[in-house]
Length: 84
Image (cartoon, rainbow, N blue to C red; front, side, top):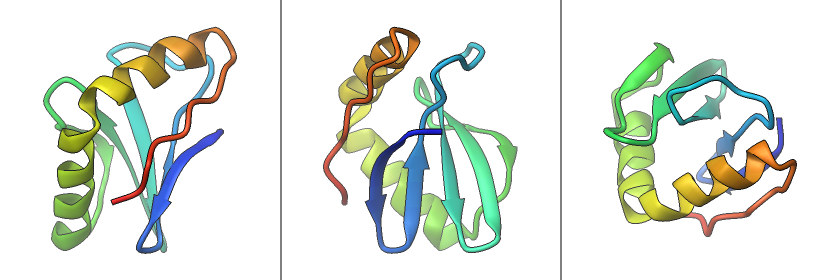
C-alpha cells in the first residue's frame, strides 16, 4: 500500500483498490488499524489510545486532503499529505 504520510513512527497508507467506505490504514509498531475518513471511526484493528488520538488529530486537520487521496488512489495516483 502506498504511504501517504509518516510522523512520530506512525505510517499512514491508502490502497489503490480498496473497498468503501473511504478509509486509510495506520501502522504503528505491532499495531494496525483502518480508520474511516468521514468520522475517524475505527473500522478494524487496534491502536494505543495516545496513537489513535494523534492519528485522529492529524486526520481532522487533513480530512479534505484524505478524501482527495481516496479519489486519486482509485485512479492509481499517490497524493502525499503533510505529517502532524
